[in-house]
Image (cartoon, rainbow, N blue to C red; front, side):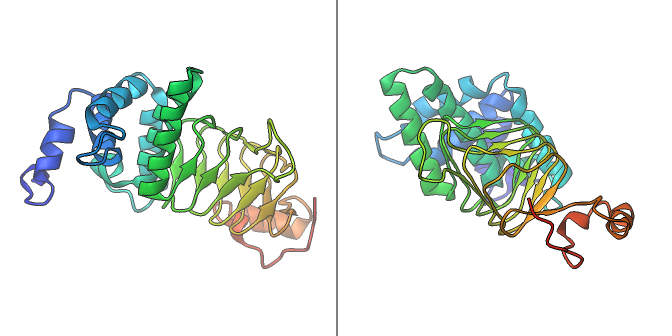
Length: 257
């Protein structure tokens, strides 16, 4: 029984078994991690209340857990997702920070930025509290993910480590990418500027994207599209290997945006 484990038992009893619902559970889990011991900066009791209130009734939270279990082969239990997945923790903490940011109050916005800072310190994930994140997000591994202030991420997306949704450095205002629903952003992908990545698109690992990506397409390298319908040979590959063709670049023909 995990609840009697010498290493985990006390935490499981307090943070999981001792709570009434998912929101209060996450209030315990997140505040335990975000708060510093013996420090007035982001005190734990206040964080617990803020996290619980912000996440209660938010359907995206449950959708995130379901997405992790459905799409991550390494996920083995609800307990693992809630207590040990730092991508999940970072996502929920950003949702809390966003509530403070959206209030518009100067003190609340600085509280949001303080939470953002703490998320970055703990989990090496830097997501601005103003960024809009849909439900069903799998932030896999999560280390090194950066999401800018005006970025939007749709529902049911998968984002691997070291992904950047950033600006070009030449603009102010609305300057970050808009990611559609059910997109996959591969490890190390860099997507820059106020561009759109269409629903169901895949951005390959280490790709650099500065132009719109049509729905359902895969982009690799520097703005290079892999078109599943460009010729009969490619369509046969797609038909036979629908689950992996996006990452098969052996037949890459240089088709460009």
